Length: 270
Length: 254
Image 1: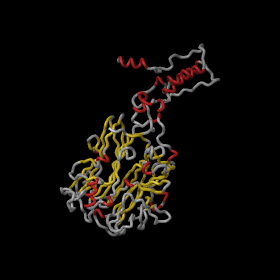
Image 2: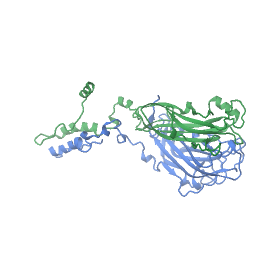
Image 3: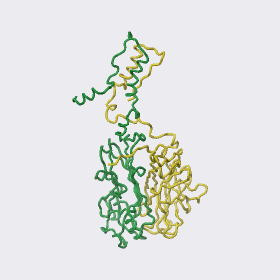
Image 4: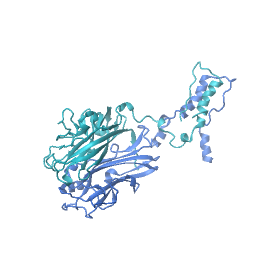
């Protein structure tokens, strides 16, 4: 219910006509006080126009969504031992190593060759096509729990699993190959993966389809006074208990990542 | 109008109608007098925003945290509630490790009895109050697994959903709901070996108290019981468990 009044200034013409125009504007015509609609008066009449903008546009000059290129090909079969596997050595949620094999674009990938460490998902290793969103640095403050003006950064990642390359079948069941996805961020200290976001998709469970995950990046993840400037999706393939990376490997195609900065308070406990 | 309402209006100084009278040409006009008369009303009625509320009202406006910021309310791992758990599933998967982890509470055993159960209620269930009600978005994700074997080991399948105020919400269920089974190991749910799920759902809630659970339904086709703690792992007799998980409850009404 915007009601506008144009204040009189010294020197303005002051007569009944000029005054009544102002009275009409504030009281009568349009959205004046005497013409408030039901929506202006009922519960929740305070709406978004009365509240500050929830998103500071200048914080996110590259937008909030990043899609794989439409022309993307089947990404190369992705073989990544993640760890240098010895028998029984397996990836762990806390694993933070990024691949450096494919110079100069590492850790972007998937890579065609065997590699170690996380890859940031990018069709054909093209950095510009990566599943990552860069933004202006936001400072995390663990005391207030804020990242910039936001209480958290909701990040969703979806990856299309096209198939598994049948090279040399590994063991079935729990020890079979799994696609492993996670969500990471970059700050002034480097790249990191959110441990709790890491998800395994065993190829006995899913042969093709959409692999979806999310996390809320919070100030305590980033660390006090660190400046987060990018979020991205990471991929690896891994297995429990096999020693060779040359078994079946996942093939991915399309992917997308989105980020929603949330300015919020806390829902009260019951 | 009740006596109470009449009393309320009588105590209030409100600009119910503008103008109180029209201005006539023969009157003496003064710029400052006019502005002083009109601007306060306009300021209060026409430019109403969060700064118009006194501190008492701010505390009552729980649909958004006005004193801290202006936006939404959320429950997630970031604010005074665990809402998530990190489990290193990589060192689980063998009988000894599973038993230790279950005993330590770092894994959640998924009951294998074909019924809906709250998934890790200590971490993922939440009771809260919505003062004004409105649209909510719920997101939950988790890792499930069963014990590590080299052969096809398990005939468990899972469905996941949100249970709100005691009712499993059918539209939130994920996992194959196609009951036409071409094979007793197929098309029944998400295969129960090692996988992950994501629930992303919106729902309008009434004002008041609500309880949200992430629920899981295990479908154990072979009618075999799960492995008892300490008992050896054999085919079709294994534990199924939940590893890392996270949930976000987002009250979207501003």
